Image 1 (tube, one colour):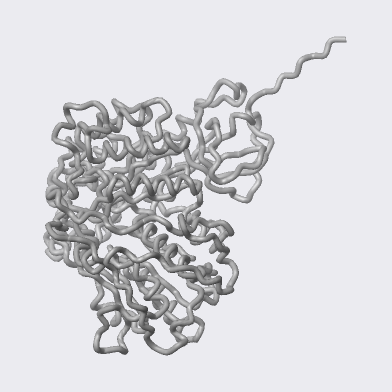
Image 2 (cartoon, one colour; image 1 turned 120 degrees about the vertical axis):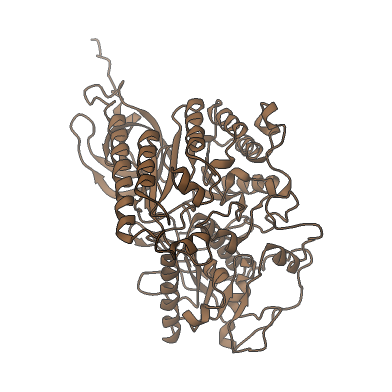
Length: 627
């Protein structure tokens, strides 16, 4: 398996390619590219409820398994083979997942469906597709750089097919949905294409089954690309009378797809939990609504059931994702209640507060001490009731909701925010952050900004620097604006009077990152300074560290602190996987991924922290034996 990392990302998407705007750490997930290169799939990798476990390191065809059950109203006609017989002889697949966590969840679901159908995943070795019969590339298509990366992998797979090493090349995801008419021009040799609303057709695409609506030009690749969610729902027999995909009217079709029974690509101890898809915001730079449509929320009961499945499978940390998690429920009539300001229990507020409360209750019922981490919050909708609920749930005894929020702000100049169509001001953004910090002890705020947006002036840039210095964020990513066709900002960039030169974009980005680096380094040094190696038992900041992996190196002896041991990489509650800094743990005892270890911060290393288990620092005083 392979996971892609782009140099740039869609601005208000969570950028897995950066850590505080710096190059990301290589991915740590099983099945995808690991810190030590591409790893084989491990025995016992999560295949979701109802999907049998298997080892994908072997290249043998697994025993046949039953295909996923049909949705109500779906066609029950037998699949129609297309092409020659060799096209249907697919027993192994190499899956390349590119893009953000939402795309990763799509990949996990498609892999689960393939595994249910008896198609065995094999790992991507770096030198080829390891003898797989078929290659699936789940693409990202938000930015030009991500399009180029996706096409690079597709071309690699096609070359392998031309050499006779691969039978089929299937392309899925955002690039297909956005540029369906151009895909064959860019990459002749694709055998099938699957859009973002049709991932449940991946088995047919990989096996070489013709779509129900086959085109006359039978030599062309087969494709499943619904125009929108409503069309996809109708094709699956879902009742759509009176329902819409408008995003805010309370009559939406909602997220009708199924995210359960995924073959997870993350380590077992953390998982992404999608609560919605699409977005209503229509920011000037964003292509999301044109690719994935307006916002569609998943039902609360289904989200709770999925959280149970993930926790029962070993997930300790659930990362809640969506393009705009703050607006959860607005499209299906389950948004923030009009009476939310007059109630105190988050359960009674509706919308995001009620969902967070339900998930917290679910973890309690399961006896889990796990974490809930909120990602992709939108500032203009983060109202006072949501702040009240977040504070109540994150500070209660035995809280699951972490005092952490990922809230892309994009800029701090009111003029640029208006040009971006963000519907928020600098003061409103600062007010949300200040109130959260006032209400929630040790609140961690992560954000992203765009430098060089069309029309941005030096004064606008200066305001952004002032804001970053004032707010002292815990983590920041900064992107140079990238023009995208079909967006308002893309048209603005065509105007020489508004376009910011590339060298100016780079300088401004670097200036923001240099300021944030200074802030981050100072914060980490301050945490480390609380530790006195001469008094290790009663000094230092105590934190719980969730172990992600072993570095496979031995820790160095540190005077007064350690006697060597293993070195592990983990995260505190203030650090999200893949995008934030990490905490290195030097331990005498062997530690395992997913283990929550009480530690003391003993040092810092730039953005990162260094910790020791509390148990290693406790002095064991022996009693003198009296004779």
